[in-house]
Image (tube, rainbow, N blue to C red):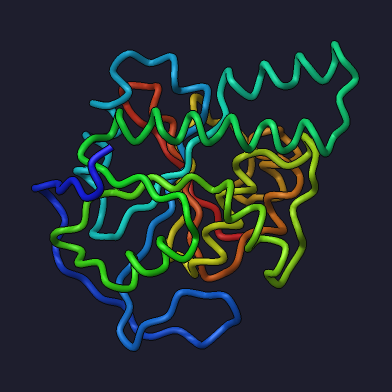
Length: 236
């Protein structure tokens, strides 16, 4: 993949106030808004997913966008292997992480122009120096982050099992980056109360997700499968 493919279009310069220093976080004296966008693996059966995501992005506020791909059918195969061959939770977890590396590469091609980033330090450097008006979206393959960085972060560590899904991984990435917003692109929105705990009880996110949210990060859920693109926001 080309190292730096540029996107012309809707992004404009924008800044937020500086945030306090926290270990392992992304810092600037004047920082740009960061939005982590998790694309649910169930959406990978949409032939027009590229167009749907592009149209949705064109209507969003200015931000540096970091995409995280769900595991989709690749992760489902790992679940089948675990059941068939009695694989351990640990082995199955890392196979699913590797499956997310595959879907991240696919998503980077789908969202072209984009930049695929595989190293946590490279992502921090890119966001620190990125210009909102000229930065293409980043697709982050979180495998190296999960192996080398996530265990060192404050807060509850992600379990190495199917109990924690890519939603919680995206939330962990958002917390590490001190993102201003976390957006979950999904195939459906359940009629549930507007908070993460209730969402976990209804099965819209996994049960670890609410504990991974770091306020004041805003959480939005968007049903990109429906033509009307309904969404809801969670405040905690």
